[in-house]
Image 1 (cartoon, rainbow, N blue to C red):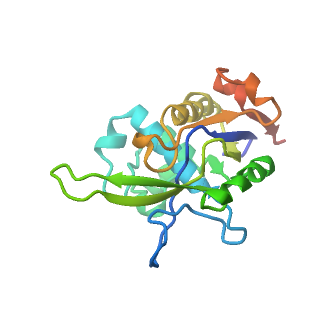
Image 2: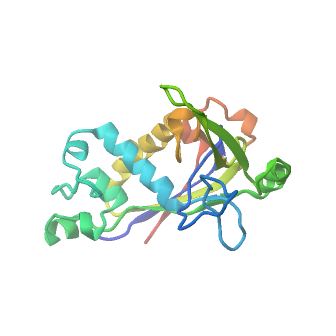
Image 3: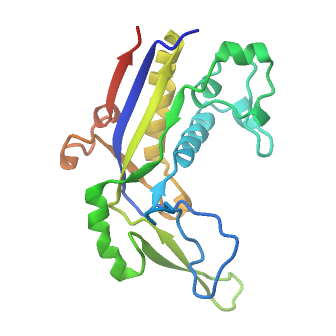
Length: 242
């Protein structure tokens, strides 16, 4: 087993609707937002963690394959296939606590193929979002929602912070190729997961309109890319290793 090639994917992720990837909160003060977004602690800018993007891609691929990926998954544990050629485990890897297969199978499977970087606002998008400060948030919007009891009573308002529609993030992924099967899985499974992400969404509250995303080639005019196949909207470069 040897690293033969590295495939690099670069794209702009466009938020077609507001995106909310939340942060954990140990305590709340009076007047705080109910649901703030995650931010870079050094710049206070919202971003998309690589773990969130990679986790959603894995989730979508598992549901598209179905079977044991869903039926044999345990609480907080994903399904660990005993097959060293399992596409999900090969592409996305397995944490030690989820890896119930033998050491020999783990060695045959090899390392995680897909690396996903954190995605930060593009400079032009950050500049455009500066206008949202007047609407209550720094580079974000504050959305007011109301929960209405079905059997009467007072409506309960809640405030949710999200990155507004139109925001753009620079996305970068690296895919390791160790053998021909990895090349096959890149085309058949990883590209499929990226297509499903556009059909589904990213972050929370997707069923309520949040999180619709669309990939754009970083070097092509956005207006020329609407409706193009996904492969034409990604910048994919390969580097063979001698």
